[in-house]
Image (cartoon, rainbow, N blue to C red; front, side, top):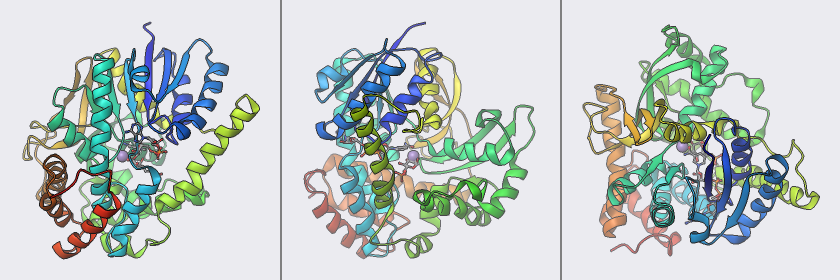
Length: 442
Ligand code: NAD
Ligand code: G6P
Ligand code: MN
């Protein structure tokens, strides 16, 4: 079997050690000859890289390892770039969350003004990395899960239309894992799903088992009572607390429209006031992550480097990230596996903008991805999606043209923002905070 060379872009990410362990657990179906890390922050990547080097040397010494902050060295001779960058890191994510909250508006990584601000930072970072890939490994594919994936996808659709980039989100996968547990199935792969929406903004319309039996009634019955919380006893970790509330809130989303099962991110658009009321303006999700995942991962990496070897209990293997290997092998082996991906609509949702970047089931093959037809969608979802996709398109317009007004319109149109006045106040503060990260707006 051919062996592949993989580059993790954003090598200093908190997800990198779990991702490396996941890749090492999948070598029988996705054999590797090289694992490389690339980041533009040498200090941050160094800590993670020293641990990864020891882990790879222990578990699969035949795989070559290299960590670099030099784009040419990193991007030369790779088959896949797995991108997980966060432009501005947690310091800027914290501001994305806290600035809108000052005005009683949702403060969230990818939704509302925070997601818009993050998008204005991410577009340049992704384009820069895509250009490195095309220069040094023109046949490679970028599998991107850097956020905000919806805005990044719209930007690359417009600015790099021929690039080999596929944008993917783990939220549907995570929720399908919950559904499988709720149903007592061994794996989410025992379900066939139909789904439509935008990234962090979608609905499951049908879920069947492999024998064709309808699983929706049982799932809805559970979600009506508990949301996507499979079992309360699984939530003993306080670091996951705010996610627990998010999984629970799906019950209220389902109550509003019980035809389909919702993506949990819809709570930020449909229950904005509730979200603001239950946010701590001084301690947001970023603070939870910095005090939790970031601290744990960096402490564990330092320990591996000190001890010179890796104890098995130090890291969680990111098993749920095996979908990235599904995607890579789908391309490499032309499997035509069906996966939920972010892609240009082109009629997949019949009564929706053909140029919108939507999230729908797609077939994955050697030449890229093909969306499956989901047909017409109802007025309620269509109205919500048209508003949200317009926000995403206006952000990209603003980034390309440097237009203050386009960005003001984007914020005003976001369902999380109450008026153009509040939109302007938040925008002006975000512009100050993002100096050096955003193009200059006129
Ligand atoms: P993190 O801050 O720990 O890691 C991101 C790394 O990217 C940092 O080391 C940073 O230095 C690096 N970076 C920033 N700009 C860069 C650039 N231009 N070139 C190269 N490297 C750059 O963040 P994290 O919490 O581990 O998350 C990483 C990314 O993955 C985020 O974008 C997050 O939103 C995303 N994510 C997406 C999904 C999904 O479903 N799509 C799931 C989880 C995380
Ligand atoms: C889910 C989403 C990602 C998002 C992440 C945030 O996995 O699909 O897009 O980045 O949650 O998680 P965090 O633990 O950083 O808040
Ligand atoms: Mn996501």
